Image (cartoon, rainbow, N blue to C red):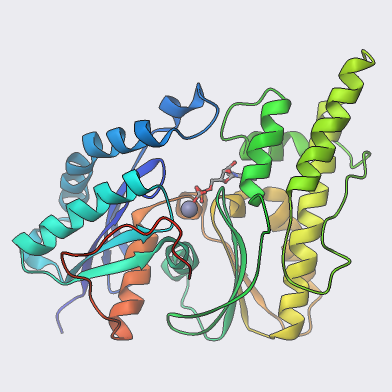
Length: 337
Ligand code: KG4
Ligand code: ZN
């Protein structure tokens, strides 16, 4: 019984990450080189800067990942890489590295969807049982996904405009908080009250979609209006009101999805899964739920972008005999699940 060892690459946005995953769930290494400091002064990720950083970091991260896992190329079962969605110039660096290693060491190349990666981060924490529900909330995505069987996805709902994390980052800027603002807004929210009663978009509509741009505008208008009148609003209350609106919508739509598709597990994935307010609300909802749905939120390091989650998703693709990629693999910036 040879162990399955997957070397995984993730370079879709602003983290260069390389991991070695054993048997689909044991993390032997998960190196993450973040570039946040280089993008902060621009208030967001600059694609050209991101790809340059990936080029500089990728070989070093690969060496570290292999050394920390105590494996060599000849021990590997396969190489996996995120090929979309994401920034094309960033994706291409991970793809080039993975192709090179696959070619040089005659290893199968497993192409992984970044969102499947976020979902299967949960497998690094606990065994998954099908069907399960996934709420993917990150800087680029807000999606409710029903996973009926391994590697089988049904998109139930998604954002029509901004992603939840993107909304956090944009209103954070108005509050004078550095990119990425989610964590700091979350902390500030815990010191305030929901006094502004911002809109809860799409709740009246009978679907599982989201919209956060109206909330963002309402927030910005409220602050600008007060500025013009020379008033100073309570920042903690603003953050708490914003967070209450985001959480109300995410939690309500998730509840509706669970009512329509009962499951035993709810996986929350992506950077916003780190949100304390969201975790508390979902925990409370599931505690009162007759189906006894289990809430699975990976630890912080696995919620954000990382290669371990890509290795976990790749292992599921291997088990379900999905086709391998060849040296023609290209980046797909707007890849769907
Ligand atoms: O998954 P991720 O690392 O990258 C993407 O694939 O987008 O998510 C990053 C996003 C950022 O928008 C960040 O502000 C948000 O996750 N975020 C949070 C929290 N921590 C990170 N949003 C709300 N509350 C948090 N505690
Ligand atoms: Zn992500």
